[in-house]
Image (cartoon, rainbow, N blue to C red; front, side, top):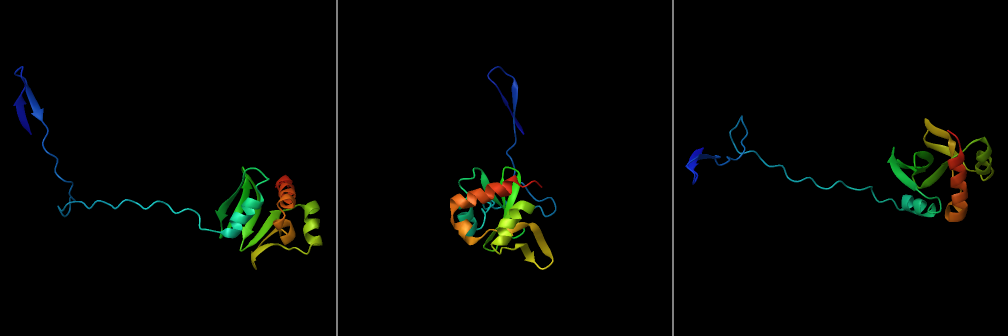
Length: 144
């Protein structure tokens, strides 16, 4: 540090020039980390995007990544699963009948994993956004 006199005669201390940061062990200049790359967004999934678009009549539906697929939510209410190009909705004893009558099966991604209260949505329902909205609202009404 050095000192200098001010016009009034008082001394002012000048700070010393900063030295570059060094690694204490090696006494070599610290390496500056490269800036982080921005976080990647969700992987493109045309089927997920199609399903969410078809459900546009049901306000607030979002698909969240989970276990290799996506969960369908409206707010905190979980009501469906998108997995390997198929859509499954939550059912109860009454709504399950409509799925079984159409020959649909419950969600079972692996032989030892299954959700017996989530049934595959028939293709004709999936392709008709108005009908799909009716089925989605029925799934949202199912109590956990």
